[in-house]
Image (cartoon, rainbow, N blue to C red; front, top):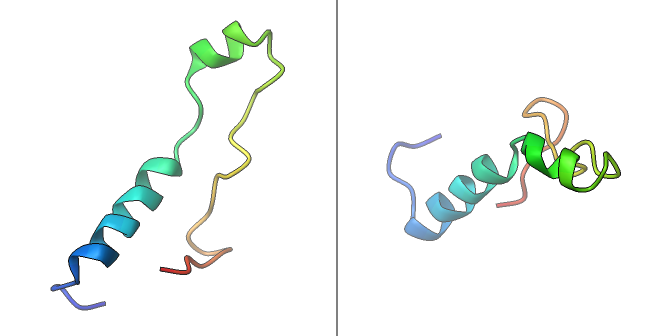
Length: 51
């Protein structure tokens, strides 16, 4: 991929990086373990981004 990207694409890629993290431990405690994992977690090999 090129080094120089349009700003819009760069912002969408940054959002994808931030949203790909696990949920914090305090969320599991606060919800009594009803929410345990992030269903939107994505692997870079398995699925592609539509950006």
